[in-house]
Amino acid sequence: MSEIARLELENFTAFKKLLLELSPGINVFIGTNGTGKTHLLKLLYTTCAITAGEKAPLGVKLRDVFKPYEGRLGRLARRQVTSVTAKFTVFRRGDLKLTGSFSNHTEKPESLKTTGEAKWRDREAVTAYIPVKEMLAHAPGFRSLYGRREIAFEETYADIVDLAFLPKLMGPPEKDRARLLRTLEKAIQGKVIAKGEHFFLKNRQGELEFSLLAEGMRKLALIWLLIQNGTLLGGSVLFWDEPESNLNPSLMREVVTLMLDLQRMGVQMFLATHNYVLLKEFDLQRQSEDSILFHALSRDDDSGDVTCQSTEDHDAISPNALVDTMVDLYERDVARDFKLVSSVPSPKVG
Image (tube, helix red, strand yellow):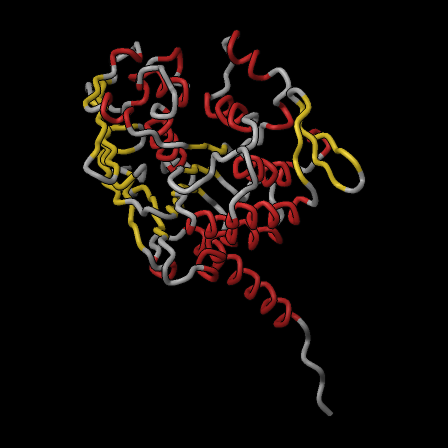
């Protein structure tokens, strides 16, 4: 089994100490900017990616996914005045664990100290990371450029382009996969085809190049490709940073339905979001058998340390910056209307 079960951090990026028990289904990370949501997704993705044909050492993959200044791994250690040792341990079902440690003085990624890396690589975890920025419209020439030049793109961008170019699985898709493909085809109003390194949306009107598609539609098209080519099957792991980015709120219902269906097929998911509608859709659509954990990250006002509260209950998420913001907007709107009503002169009587 490839499920990630637990994460322990010490002095890693924004985190002084963190222990997370993770859902085998959907994990939703919320919190204000700067609380480390994307860092958690990137770290977990890195540990999964090295099992799927990745030959680079863990430290090299970590550097290429995070892109610290001058490639110095030590810059991923929590910033403080004195020297510090950063450590992370990731646990998978079946008592398999991987540990990495380095100091804030570590420069070369090969200097990362690991425990359990060889056994960890023996159990493959098929994985995909969908970054905030959609990449399929920029795919032509990107892979060759990334492979030959030093460019400031995190490796997650190159990885997702590579996955998108995988050919579809042989034979007809099984029932559940076929149903998801049809649902997505309805949402994007067509199917995706590739010609060389160019992607097109094919429908009754013809073939529309991705550079002319709305970015939100391109993200849904990417999910279609990942389901079609077998990347997203039972036992795989999906990381999706801000699924709501550039997506019309009217499509949130379909997106959450899709993610719940993938979870029921055995895909483990890690999401980072700032969107109240997405969060509420999970609450409205989830069924009793669905496994969802909400992880609320926050920064202590006094110490500055980032902490996390996890819950299965949407209504018990605390702190919940998304709900707090919606309540604030509502109260301000009511206050404005009340002020307007109060300013209208009362009609004279008699």
